[in-house]
Image (cartoon, rainbow, N blue to C red; front, side):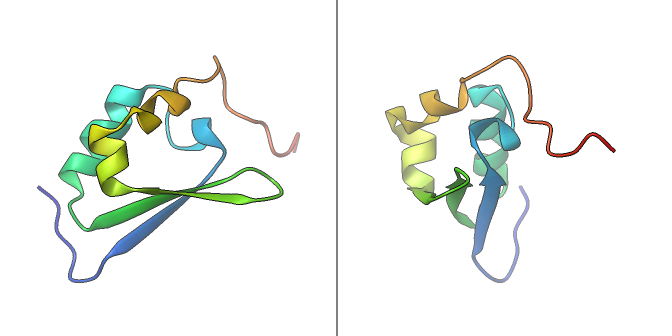
Length: 75
């Protein structure tokens, strides 16, 4: 179990920016107990997902979205 003194808001670039496997995300959030929410940036808006929704809600299915990561640069 990983514990920090302060609450963490984890920000990712789209759903696959954290992982393509919902089970990995669930396990990561369960281990990192100080994470209070995951914020997904969609390029034009932010979506805030509370920790409990990631662990117990259907929201986690959104992360099972595509086969690859977004390439931000070709350099």
